[in-house]
Image 1: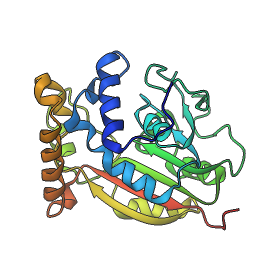
Image 2 (image 1 turned 30 degrees about the vertical axis):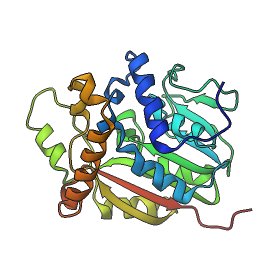
Image 3 (image 1 turned 180 degrees about the vertical axis):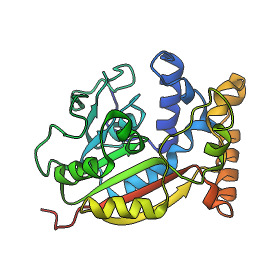
Length: 258
């Protein structure tokens, strides 16, 4: 069972790395290193800045479950949503966590009532909705519907159109890159069309992260190295912000909270 004491971000990251080591088959092998997972600290800070602990949160497109894990360990009331089965090994054995599987034949509709959540989190999901027959504006409209008044949508890992890492990946066969990429004006337009209000936008991630999954275990598990890589990334992201890999943005639903 999980302790009632809430851990700090580094402790959560350590737990995620340990889970990735234990369950490499669940699409989380790239999380078996601190240099890669330390990038999540920015997401954690953004989320805590805008969403109070204890709030009801939907993890939209739960994927391998690492952000759901952070939410649960940070004291949020979490529901995960995905078209795929949730990897139970990554989820906490906590009866308060709820998982809802969506219908891939209806990729836009969310099976929740109006005004169900105080916040919706998206980590590397919005850029893929067109690939499953969806539409960004329609999906954001659904998210706006299920958000409570004054609720927020926190979107992370949205690919930057001018990302240097993405540009380099497209030059090599068999390297993963994103088909759909965005600018700050694209984000503003999408948010406006979905009747949400853009609150904050930030580019991040100049240095690559996933490469460290192939490093020797001793280096992968060295926190000082991970922190140094994190600091260097933040320093380089300042002058080279246009070339950073990702966006994180926050949008709010107009209205007054209850």
